[in-house]
Amino acid sequence: MASIPPQFADASLAQQLQSARALSQRLAREPRALHSGIAELDACFAGVRPGDLVEWGIPPGFNGRLIPLQLLKHEIPLSVWIYHHDGLGVFASSWLSHGVDLERLFFICSEWPVRELRPLFLEDTFRRIIIDSPRRFSAGDMAFVSQQARRHGQIVFLIRHYFLSEKRGNPYASLRLNTWQSGKRAFALQVIKGATPGRLALPYRAVAEDHADYDADH
Image (cartoon, rainbow, N blue to C red; front, top):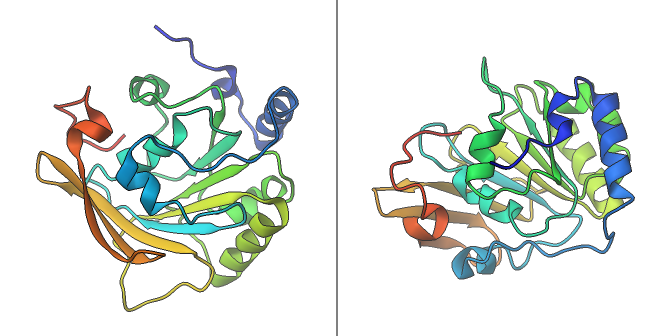
């Protein structure tokens, strides 16, 4: 069984940043394009560039987080997943079982990420930042995070705990989409804003071929 990376034992933002900076010095700094190895998904994200913010609607109970996981498997640059779920933690073994590169992915729990983790956004240590269902995330927070992403050449994913509406826009996001499991054989992606708006389907086996009985969000 794969070992659990040491950053899971870190208890504070300062410790996480210290560990990440040390690891960053050993990694190549050139920017990497988003890549999942799934043709349909890679085509959907082909227009996303460093400095962009992606807003993603993924309600709980629809297994939709299996889709962003596909973008965290192939020699990813240093990344951080900021999460907030009442009473839930991170089960590293589950992420490892889905092929996620946990040697380069850090986790931090925060209900108010901009207020509590501001130093993280003021430097370029993490090249991918996933903000998962924050309890508070204002228009000012959005503007700040977007500005910092452009300054540092990062890609930021803002995951919402609900489906995004086509009637409400987001001027800071270059790509807005919803994802969910559609039946037992496919996942659905609905692109609301992006180069190719519309809906596409991903075969279940392409996303979780070794998890045919997977029936709950992780």
